[in-house]
Length: 236
Image 1: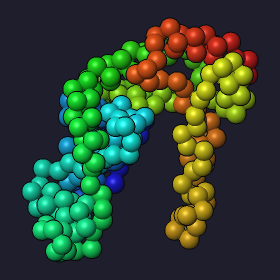
Image 2: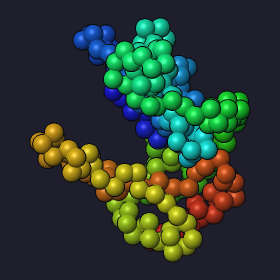
Image 3: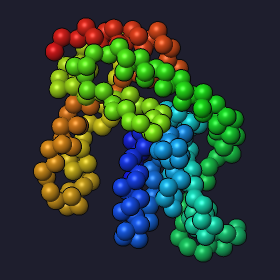
Image 4: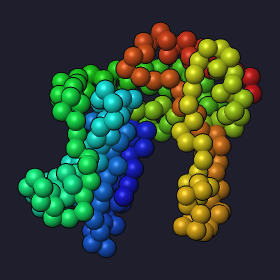
């Protein structure tokens, strides 16, 4: 399973080479990458499954919790449909132990309409991200821009060695930020006994310095310029 984090596709060429070499099945976590592409190919179309979240804050967000799985394999599609509906193909007859994970019709109707706007939503967020890239000072570590990768910027994530001080400074100036994510996986209580190696210095550095800046379809260019102006005045 791979994760296209923050709206940026993973490096799919070496991943696909490993998949083919070892005969692996690939699940893509596309919860944050609606409309993102790697060398012209959409995320969610490389593996056997692509899993999408439609949580309201996503680029393609519903009115509440929602999600979908995509596949181009008819047998796998049948298995997924069965699992989401109590393990049943025919009402009251359960082939396997399944779940109640059907997408609510109201959410589906809303998403069907909003899907037409996804290119516009992504383009707007890319314009706002371009302001951060062009104007924000280089003493903040910005996301990497890569050729042939269409990043949809679900989140605009920077890094700074004085992250906590920076977060408070922004909050004191009326700017809310978020930490995605505050605890590294190997530090999570749920992973005790699962991940036994405690030496992951790169992960710990990322989790100690990461900060997500305002960037949504609801933000205007002027609002982002204000955020950048405040950021550029930060004294480390």
